[in-house]
Length: 120
Image 1 (cartoon, helix red, strand yellow):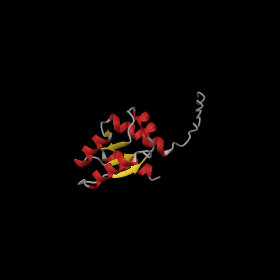
Image 2: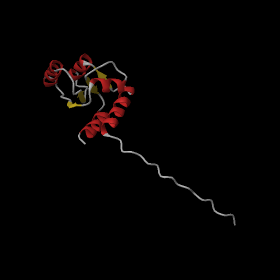
Image 3: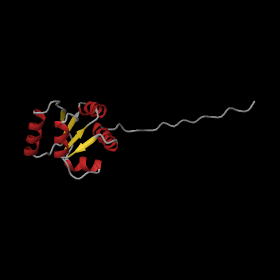
Image 4: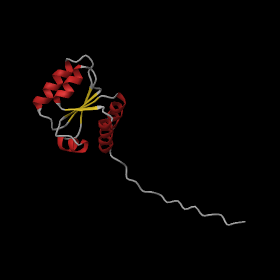
């Protein structure tokens, strides 16, 4: 009989990934899938049409812009979930976009997963 081969296993040490990194990754996937809109005008149009499932506002959004968007959301037929996340520079850089403070997620699956990470 031939000697049996030794199987070596090596444990890979991984650090837990923070929820903010997971959200940015999901937003990148949503952008590549065409399920993301950004900017005031694009989000305004899609909120009015009832297409946006989740509206992300950055933490450093101007009060005037926030108030205008909230007024639009209040008059919408289908009100999207609104959450605060990150800042303009970090969010825009991660998504490869010009600086923007409003992101709209069109797909309900992406929206639900992002909401679950934001509430952790």
